[in-house]
Image (tube, rainbow, N blue to C red; front, side):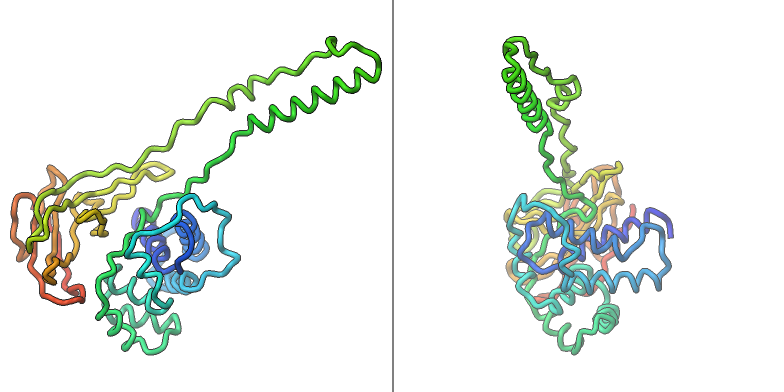
Length: 315
Protein backbone atom coordinates (compact mmCIF):
# COMPACT_ATOMS: atom_id res chain seq x y z
CA UNK A 1 0.00 0.00 0.00
CA UNK A 2 1.30 3.50 -0.84
CA UNK A 3 1.76 6.20 1.77
CA UNK A 4 -1.13 8.20 0.28
CA UNK A 5 -3.45 5.20 0.55
CA UNK A 6 -2.39 4.67 4.18
CA UNK A 7 -3.06 8.32 4.97
CA UNK A 8 -6.48 8.09 3.36
CA UNK A 9 -7.32 5.05 5.51
CA UNK A 10 -6.12 6.95 8.56
CA UNK A 11 -8.37 9.94 7.79
CA UNK A 12 -11.37 7.70 7.14
CA UNK A 13 -10.93 5.95 10.49
CA UNK A 14 -10.80 9.32 12.26
CA UNK A 15 -14.06 10.27 10.56
CA UNK A 16 -15.80 7.03 11.57
CA UNK A 17 -14.43 7.20 15.12
CA UNK A 18 -15.78 10.76 15.44
CA UNK A 19 -19.27 9.56 14.53
CA UNK A 20 -19.19 6.43 16.74
CA UNK A 21 -18.10 8.35 19.85
CA UNK A 22 -20.85 9.10 22.41
CA UNK A 23 -22.32 12.60 22.46
CA UNK A 24 -21.97 15.33 25.05
CA UNK A 25 -18.66 16.92 24.04
CA UNK A 26 -17.91 19.81 21.71
CA UNK A 27 -17.01 19.05 18.10
CA UNK A 28 -13.38 20.01 18.77
CA UNK A 29 -13.09 17.66 21.76
CA UNK A 30 -14.72 14.79 19.83
CA UNK A 31 -12.38 15.27 16.87
CA UNK A 32 -9.30 15.43 19.12
CA UNK A 33 -10.40 12.25 20.91
CA UNK A 34 -11.04 10.45 17.61
CA UNK A 35 -7.57 11.39 16.38
CA UNK A 36 -5.99 10.14 19.61
CA UNK A 37 -7.83 6.80 19.43
CA UNK A 38 -6.79 6.22 15.82
CA UNK A 39 -3.18 7.28 16.34
CA UNK A 40 -2.86 4.90 19.32
CA UNK A 41 -4.03 1.92 17.27
CA UNK A 42 -3.12 2.62 13.64
CA UNK A 43 0.52 3.37 12.78
CA UNK A 44 1.16 5.90 10.04
CA UNK A 45 3.26 3.45 8.04
CA UNK A 46 1.36 1.26 5.54
CA UNK A 47 -0.21 -1.91 6.96
CA UNK A 48 -1.27 -5.16 5.38
CA UNK A 49 -5.00 -6.03 5.15
CA UNK A 50 -5.01 -8.28 8.24
CA UNK A 51 -3.12 -5.82 10.46
CA UNK A 52 -5.36 -2.97 9.29
CA UNK A 53 -8.52 -4.98 10.03
CA UNK A 54 -7.31 -5.72 13.58
CA UNK A 55 -6.39 -2.08 14.19
CA UNK A 56 -9.78 -0.99 12.84
CA UNK A 57 -11.63 -3.19 15.33
CA UNK A 58 -9.60 -1.71 18.20
CA UNK A 59 -10.48 1.80 17.03
CA UNK A 60 -14.21 1.00 16.86
CA UNK A 61 -14.17 -0.69 20.30
CA UNK A 62 -12.54 2.30 22.01
CA UNK A 63 -14.80 4.71 20.10
CA UNK A 64 -17.94 2.96 21.36
CA UNK A 65 -16.86 3.38 24.99
CA UNK A 66 -13.74 5.62 25.09
CA UNK A 67 -11.49 5.18 28.14
CA UNK A 68 -11.30 8.28 30.31
CA UNK A 69 -7.49 8.31 30.10
CA UNK A 70 -7.63 8.99 26.34
CA UNK A 71 -9.60 12.21 26.58
CA UNK A 72 -7.24 15.07 25.59
CA UNK A 73 -7.24 18.41 27.44
CA UNK A 74 -9.14 20.38 24.77
CA UNK A 75 -11.24 23.41 25.76
CA UNK A 76 -14.90 23.49 24.81
CA UNK A 77 -14.57 26.14 22.11
CA UNK A 78 -17.88 25.46 20.40
CA UNK A 79 -20.64 23.24 21.74
CA UNK A 80 -23.47 21.60 19.84
CA UNK A 81 -23.67 19.37 16.78
CA UNK A 82 -25.74 19.06 13.61
CA UNK A 83 -29.28 17.70 14.17
CA UNK A 84 -28.47 14.35 12.55
CA UNK A 85 -25.48 13.88 14.83
CA UNK A 86 -27.64 14.47 17.91
CA UNK A 87 -30.00 11.72 16.74
CA UNK A 88 -27.03 9.45 16.13
CA UNK A 89 -25.66 10.12 19.62
CA UNK A 90 -29.03 9.12 21.09
CA UNK A 91 -28.57 5.54 19.85
CA UNK A 92 -26.89 2.84 21.92
CA UNK A 93 -23.17 2.26 21.23
CA UNK A 94 -24.02 -0.98 19.39
CA UNK A 95 -26.68 0.72 17.24
CA UNK A 96 -24.37 3.66 16.60
CA UNK A 97 -21.46 1.59 15.32
CA UNK A 98 -23.79 -0.54 13.17
CA UNK A 99 -25.44 2.56 11.70
CA UNK A 100 -22.13 4.29 10.93
CA UNK A 101 -20.56 1.21 9.31
CA UNK A 102 -23.58 0.27 7.19
CA UNK A 103 -25.36 3.56 6.51
CA UNK A 104 -22.48 6.07 6.50
CA UNK A 105 -19.39 4.07 5.49
CA UNK A 106 -21.49 1.91 3.16
CA UNK A 107 -19.72 -1.34 4.04
CA UNK A 108 -21.26 -4.55 2.75
CA UNK A 109 -23.55 -6.37 5.13
CA UNK A 110 -21.30 -9.39 5.65
CA UNK A 111 -18.33 -7.11 6.39
CA UNK A 112 -20.33 -5.21 9.01
CA UNK A 113 -21.47 -8.48 10.62
CA UNK A 114 -17.87 -9.68 10.83
CA UNK A 115 -16.79 -6.43 12.49
CA UNK A 116 -19.70 -6.59 14.95
CA UNK A 117 -18.74 -10.17 15.81
CA UNK A 118 -15.14 -9.08 16.45
CA UNK A 119 -16.49 -6.32 18.70
CA UNK A 120 -18.47 -8.88 20.67
CA UNK A 121 -21.85 -7.37 19.74
CA UNK A 122 -24.59 -10.05 20.10
CA UNK A 123 -27.50 -10.45 17.68
CA UNK A 124 -25.83 -8.70 14.76
CA UNK A 125 -28.48 -9.89 12.28
CA UNK A 126 -31.37 -8.38 14.25
CA UNK A 127 -29.31 -5.27 14.99
CA UNK A 128 -28.64 -4.64 11.29
CA UNK A 129 -32.29 -5.18 10.42
CA UNK A 130 -33.23 -2.60 13.04
CA UNK A 131 -30.62 -0.15 11.72
CA UNK A 132 -31.72 -0.70 8.11
CA UNK A 133 -35.30 0.24 9.01
CA UNK A 134 -34.26 3.55 10.60
CA UNK A 135 -34.88 6.86 8.89
CA UNK A 136 -31.85 8.54 7.35
CA UNK A 137 -30.26 10.55 10.18
CA UNK A 138 -28.27 12.74 7.77
CA UNK A 139 -25.19 12.80 9.95
CA UNK A 140 -22.38 15.24 9.23
CA UNK A 141 -18.69 14.70 10.01
CA UNK A 142 -15.94 17.34 9.79
CA UNK A 143 -12.88 16.82 7.62
CA UNK A 144 -11.27 13.79 9.26
CA UNK A 145 -7.71 15.08 9.15
CA UNK A 146 -8.49 18.57 10.47
CA UNK A 147 -6.61 19.42 13.62
CA UNK A 148 -8.16 21.03 16.65
CA UNK A 149 -6.78 24.52 16.93
CA UNK A 150 -6.27 25.59 20.54
CA UNK A 151 -6.22 29.32 21.14
CA UNK A 152 -2.90 30.16 22.79
CA UNK A 153 -2.59 33.01 25.26
CA UNK A 154 0.09 35.61 24.59
CA UNK A 155 3.02 35.58 27.04
CA UNK A 156 3.41 39.36 26.85
CA UNK A 157 1.03 40.17 29.76
CA UNK A 158 2.84 37.65 31.98
CA UNK A 159 6.21 39.16 31.08
CA UNK A 160 4.96 42.67 31.75
CA UNK A 161 3.63 41.65 35.15
CA UNK A 162 6.98 40.07 36.07
CA UNK A 163 8.86 43.23 35.05
CA UNK A 164 6.50 45.42 37.08
CA UNK A 165 6.90 43.19 40.14
CA UNK A 166 10.69 43.30 39.84
CA UNK A 167 10.63 47.09 39.52
CA UNK A 168 8.48 47.51 42.65
CA UNK A 169 10.71 45.15 44.61
CA UNK A 170 13.78 47.14 43.55
CA UNK A 171 12.16 50.43 44.59
CA UNK A 172 11.31 48.97 47.98
CA UNK A 173 14.90 47.84 48.53
CA UNK A 174 16.30 51.21 47.49
CA UNK A 175 13.91 53.09 49.75
CA UNK A 176 15.01 50.95 52.70
CA UNK A 177 18.60 52.07 51.98
CA UNK A 178 17.57 55.79 51.85
CA UNK A 179 18.34 55.95 48.13
CA UNK A 180 15.95 58.22 46.17
CA UNK A 181 13.43 56.23 44.26
CA UNK A 182 13.96 58.46 41.18
CA UNK A 183 17.43 56.98 40.86
CA UNK A 184 16.00 53.56 40.22
CA UNK A 185 15.58 52.67 36.53
CA UNK A 186 12.55 50.69 35.48
CA UNK A 187 13.36 47.77 33.25
CA UNK A 188 12.30 48.19 29.63
CA UNK A 189 10.56 45.35 27.78
CA UNK A 190 13.03 43.44 25.65
CA UNK A 191 12.83 43.29 21.86
CA UNK A 192 11.68 39.66 22.20
CA UNK A 193 8.71 40.78 24.27
CA UNK A 194 7.87 43.47 21.70
CA UNK A 195 7.97 40.98 18.90
CA UNK A 196 5.61 38.71 20.86
CA UNK A 197 2.89 41.35 20.44
CA UNK A 198 2.93 40.91 16.66
CA UNK A 199 -0.13 38.78 15.85
CA UNK A 200 0.44 35.55 13.98
CA UNK A 201 -1.20 35.14 10.60
CA UNK A 202 -4.40 33.09 10.88
CA UNK A 203 -4.39 29.56 9.45
CA UNK A 204 -5.92 29.19 6.00
CA UNK A 205 -9.65 28.63 6.01
CA UNK A 206 -11.42 25.79 4.17
CA UNK A 207 -12.81 26.67 0.77
CA UNK A 208 -15.59 25.15 -1.27
CA UNK A 209 -15.64 24.42 -4.99
CA UNK A 210 -19.09 24.25 -6.53
CA UNK A 211 -19.66 21.27 -8.83
CA UNK A 212 -23.35 21.87 -9.53
CA UNK A 213 -26.19 24.15 -8.50
CA UNK A 214 -29.81 23.87 -9.56
CA UNK A 215 -33.12 22.21 -8.79
CA UNK A 216 -33.11 18.70 -7.34
CA UNK A 217 -35.30 15.96 -8.80
CA UNK A 218 -38.67 15.05 -7.29
CA UNK A 219 -39.69 18.68 -6.82
CA UNK A 220 -37.33 19.08 -3.85
CA UNK A 221 -36.28 22.62 -4.68
CA UNK A 222 -32.78 24.08 -5.09
CA UNK A 223 -29.58 22.42 -3.96
CA UNK A 224 -25.89 22.28 -4.80
CA UNK A 225 -23.05 19.75 -4.82
CA UNK A 226 -19.77 21.05 -3.41
CA UNK A 227 -16.25 19.87 -2.73
CA UNK A 228 -14.84 21.24 0.53
CA UNK A 229 -11.05 21.73 0.53
CA UNK A 230 -9.77 21.72 4.14
CA UNK A 231 -6.05 22.66 4.54
CA UNK A 232 -3.88 20.06 6.27
CA UNK A 233 -1.19 21.09 8.80
CA UNK A 234 1.61 19.54 6.72
CA UNK A 235 0.41 21.02 3.43
CA UNK A 236 -2.14 19.91 0.89
CA UNK A 237 -5.88 19.55 1.34
CA UNK A 238 -8.49 17.11 2.61
CA UNK A 239 -11.30 17.00 0.02
CA UNK A 240 -14.82 15.96 1.01
CA UNK A 241 -17.93 16.13 -1.16
CA UNK A 242 -21.25 17.36 0.20
CA UNK A 243 -24.80 18.15 -0.86
CA UNK A 244 -26.30 21.36 0.51
CA UNK A 245 -30.09 21.23 0.63
CA UNK A 246 -32.53 23.18 2.77
CA UNK A 247 -29.69 24.68 4.76
CA UNK A 248 -28.22 21.30 5.75
CA UNK A 249 -25.05 19.56 4.54
CA UNK A 250 -25.16 15.88 3.58
CA UNK A 251 -21.86 14.04 3.29
CA UNK A 252 -21.07 12.74 -0.18
CA UNK A 253 -18.28 10.74 -1.81
CA UNK A 254 -14.63 11.76 -1.45
CA UNK A 255 -13.97 14.34 -4.16
CA UNK A 256 -10.17 14.06 -4.36
CA UNK A 257 -10.48 12.88 -7.99
CA UNK A 258 -12.68 15.82 -8.98
CA UNK A 259 -15.95 13.82 -8.80
CA UNK A 260 -18.48 13.29 -6.05
CA UNK A 261 -21.91 11.75 -5.50
CA UNK A 262 -24.32 10.36 -2.91
CA UNK A 263 -27.64 8.61 -2.44
CA UNK A 264 -30.26 11.21 -1.52
CA UNK A 265 -33.93 10.70 -0.67
CA UNK A 266 -36.47 13.18 -1.98
CA UNK A 267 -39.34 14.46 0.21
CA UNK A 268 -41.63 12.03 -1.65
CA UNK A 269 -39.52 9.08 -0.40
CA UNK A 270 -37.78 8.31 -3.71
CA UNK A 271 -34.03 7.69 -3.66
CA UNK A 272 -31.81 9.33 -6.27
CA UNK A 273 -28.08 9.04 -6.74
CA UNK A 274 -26.73 12.53 -7.47
CA UNK A 275 -23.30 13.02 -9.03
CA UNK A 276 -21.30 15.92 -10.45
CA UNK A 277 -17.70 16.85 -11.19
CA UNK A 278 -15.58 19.96 -10.95
CA UNK A 279 -15.43 22.22 -14.01
CA UNK A 280 -13.08 20.74 -16.62
CA UNK A 281 -13.41 17.15 -15.34
CA UNK A 282 -15.42 14.75 -17.48
CA UNK A 283 -17.94 12.46 -15.79
CA UNK A 284 -20.02 9.50 -16.92
CA UNK A 285 -22.49 7.47 -14.83
CA UNK A 286 -23.88 4.12 -15.96
CA UNK A 287 -27.70 4.11 -16.23
CA UNK A 288 -27.67 7.78 -15.30
CA UNK A 289 -29.46 10.74 -16.81
CA UNK A 290 -27.65 14.02 -17.32
CA UNK A 291 -29.23 17.41 -16.85
CA UNK A 292 -26.67 20.14 -17.25
CA UNK A 293 -23.73 19.16 -15.05
CA UNK A 294 -25.82 16.92 -12.74
CA UNK A 295 -26.10 13.16 -13.23
CA UNK A 296 -28.99 11.32 -11.58
CA UNK A 297 -29.75 7.62 -11.13
CA UNK A 298 -33.31 6.79 -10.11
CA UNK A 299 -33.54 4.45 -7.12
CA UNK A 300 -36.32 2.75 -5.14
CA UNK A 301 -38.61 4.16 -2.50
CA UNK A 302 -38.27 3.47 1.21
CA UNK A 303 -36.28 4.38 4.29
CA UNK A 304 -33.27 2.17 3.59
CA UNK A 305 -30.32 3.58 1.65
CA UNK A 306 -29.94 1.58 -1.59
CA UNK A 307 -27.07 -0.88 -1.46
CA UNK A 308 -26.29 -0.42 -5.14
CA UNK A 309 -22.80 0.94 -5.81
CA UNK A 310 -22.59 3.67 -8.43
CA UNK A 311 -19.35 4.07 -10.40
CA UNK A 312 -18.31 7.58 -11.41
CA UNK A 313 -16.33 7.13 -14.63
CA UNK A 314 -14.18 9.49 -16.64
CA UNK A 315 -15.42 10.67 -20.02
